[in-house]
Length: 248
Image (cartoon, rainbow, N blue to C red; front, side):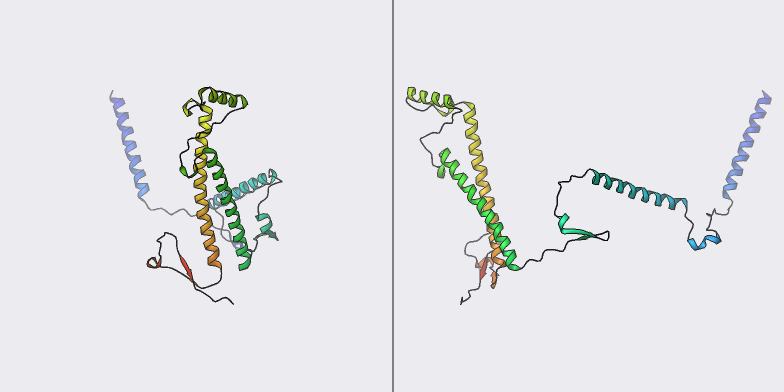
């Protein structure tokens, strides 16, 4: 028992002295480690590349390599029928990509282009108004006036004959609640289409008025923007007044 206890004390003292020596060794100031410098015969090549510099250079190289690989894959699987305007607006000169010069249009050409756009908007506006007239005539809802007549839609000739036979037998057309669900859905969808087309007409009118105002502002002549107290009918849109000029 005494022998084991003496061995334990010896080991304990040995460990204590070891940790004490290690702590003293860390406390002693030692010479700082310096990386290997460039040899004299290679001084003309600049600083010696360290490992951390190599890691940065390798990452940049592999990043460029992956990017080039992706570009090669895009070029290999590209659509031969694909077209976009940069194909004709830009070009490559001596390996350098150059953008095309912006188109320099005169004022007359710009006004002509604007008038063509306004013509397209006006054409769409008139087309929508005609469609609204046809829908309102079909649904008997012109000017939101109630009508004593009803329009019933038939799926085919047999359905039309059935409606006519019921009309003759009952002395009048069947009530709207007695119609098939398909006809009710078509009528409801027609009313929804009518409402959507009316909203579209309002948007087109707004766009047309804005484009017409911009076109007028591009024309020659002195003009100024009216103040709020000068406007007779208050509106959220700006109002301009042109100076009267004598035409020769």
